[in-house]
Picture 1 (cartoon, rainbow, N blue to C red):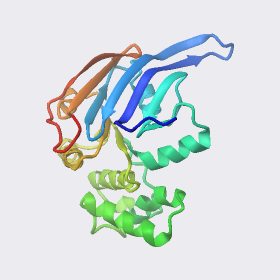
Picture 2 (cartoon, one colour; picture 1 turned 180 degrees about the horizontal axis):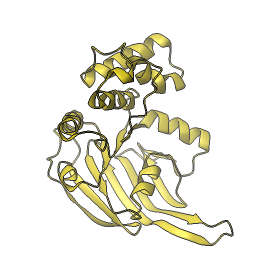
Picture 3 (cartoon, one colour; picture 1 turned 90 degrees about the horizontal axis):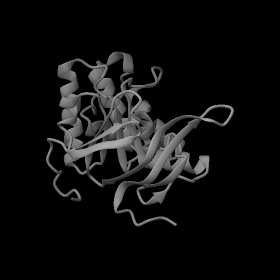
Picture 4 (cartoon, rainbow, N blue to C red; picture 1 turned 45 degrees about the vertical axis):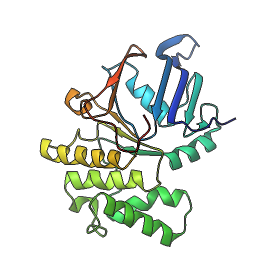
Length: 243
């Protein structure tokens, strides 16, 4: 039964264990994580290599499923969904932005942004209209017919962000989104994320950079598969966001 969606994401006792072929435990990547992320919050996930940070992001993004525990995404208990239903929920409720932009070089900018909607089988006119709107939202309304190779790195990341936004996701997840960008371009991308946060979007960012994390509203730090600290960041609550 689905919970009332009080939070964009709610984890209860989440564990993830990787096993060897003989069935013995290889590593306990997550050890009973409890975490609530309210709608509209801007959260940084931090931790050293091996802390469980990547595993947690994969579970939050519905790219993997927990060994035990519950995960409610936008009110839906996704921990035990069959693969096809989990994939459908991921496509509609999660937007991903990666360090590598992962754009399709043969497609134009607007076609790249349309791709998630193609998998949702939306009519072509609706796909195009939503893609154009999403690109305008990130300041690229004048680049619709360009191909990725004709854009700067910062513009390519903006296309990737537009693609992530086009499904109107419950959560936008960003994994080191400025890692391939120079400092000035990275600043412009962070400013865009902050503008999206001010519009009420829920953002989860994986970063190793304390300076970037300090610009988030909340910083969750993992160590050895558990939450080591959960504190306020330097950014204030977005207007209209839940407390």
